[in-house]
Image 1 (cartoon, rainbow, N blue to C red):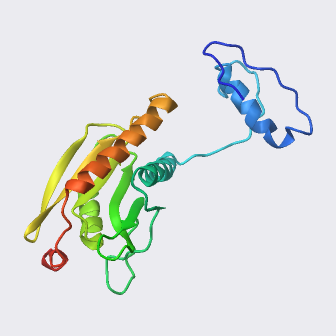
Image 2 (image 1 turned 90 degrees about the vertical axis):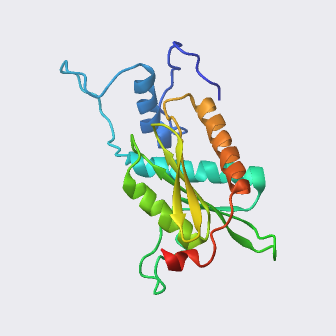
Image 3 (image 1 turned 120 degrees about the vertical axis):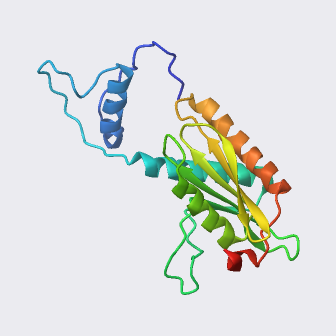
Length: 212
């Protein structure tokens, strides 16, 4: 396997029994490398298999797993993408759905406890509902820092008073238009930023949830 230089002609391949399972994917890749399109507009036809991708789901899944693995390599612990272990209510009917909860050993007893909560947003700009959602995550998980990651826009931070303390909700941006090697570096930098902010933050007091 090798990286194809920019502008190089697409490699030739012949369908056979060895690549039968990948023939459609190879045809699609060849189409992309040639700069061609399904919408030719000149009467020609191309036989293709349809594929529908829900981009916001893909962005959430990719970011949760990538940041989780970067945190695991950096600080240890256990990432839980799409964590469903917490409910907003005591009856457990309103399940919280953060894209990533990262667990680290507690200094008190060594048991793994929630230390980072992150949610990905495939949006062009932040919305107030995002802050409400992250505030609920932080209060329920007992964390003083929360992280929203957008596909575009500007980074920033919002401080939310909770009882006698406050939450910090960080807004980060991961630019998907960057080359994949740069994108991997951006994910590592994001994990470093999350770790640094987490180290400086204080846990929300247990009474804060009751005073919301």
